[in-house]
Length: 164
Image 1 (tube, rainbow, N blue to C red):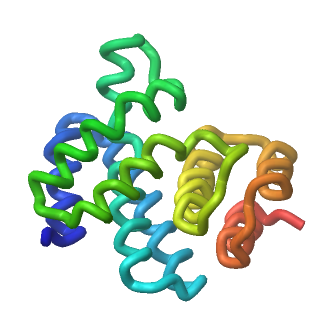
Image 2 (image 1 turned 30 degrees about the vertical axis):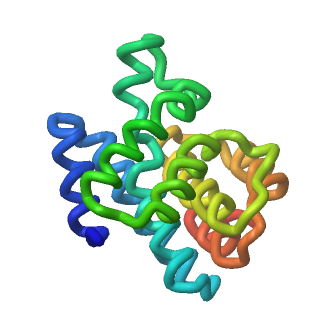
C-alpha cells in the first residue's frame, strides 16, 4: 500500500503548474489530519480522512474543462473516477478507495453529513476556504453554527477568525 507522501507527490504532479490548488489541498490535508488526531479517530479512518483531504478537489480541472466551471457539484461528479484511478495506481486498499471516492462525491453536499470522516473533511475544507475566499465573519459564524460538529474544528475556526 502506498503512503500519504506518495499520494501527495502524485497530486502535486497532477496539479503541476497550479500552485494555488496545490497549496489548497495541502492546507486542507493539514487541518484534516490535525482534527482527526485531536478527535482521536482510529488509524484506519484517519488514513481515509487524510487521503480524502489530499484528493478532495481532484475533479476541478476536469470540471473546468467539461463544464467551464469549478462549482462544487461538478467537482463531486468528476472527482471520484479520477481519485479512484490514482488511488488504485498507488495500490491503496479497495475499502479505502471506495470510501475516499464517496467523500469526494459528497464534500460539497452539506445537508447529508452522515459520518465523522465526511464531517472532518468538510470542516477542514471550510477552514481553508473561509480564509482563501475572504468570507465575512458573519458568514463564517453561520456556517460554524449550522455545519461544524467537532470540538477541534470549532476551536480552530474560532481561533483563526477570532470568533465569539
